[in-house]
Length: 101
Image (cartoon, rainbow, N blue to C red; front, side, top):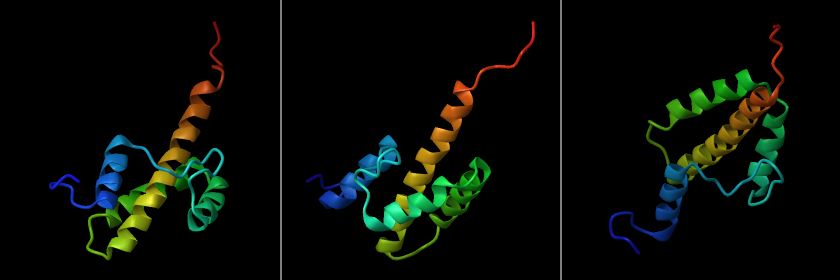
């Protein structure tokens, strides 16, 4: 493995984070563990504002010191929320314009 990134798990997490790719898909739940599925189902019903607020909160928590397992869970939640946020944006982009001539 690469000496700079350390073990394979850390390297994979780094590449996925930098690439904006997460194994848990909000579309079909593929690649999600049970904890992620439960979290996803909870947040699917929330508004775009709620999702953005939670993203901001979790982003602030990332700067703190914590166990690696807790940091991993924060990153998993951020990955899920970013996908949800993007899906809200896609829905508003697809909405027909109501401009009058």
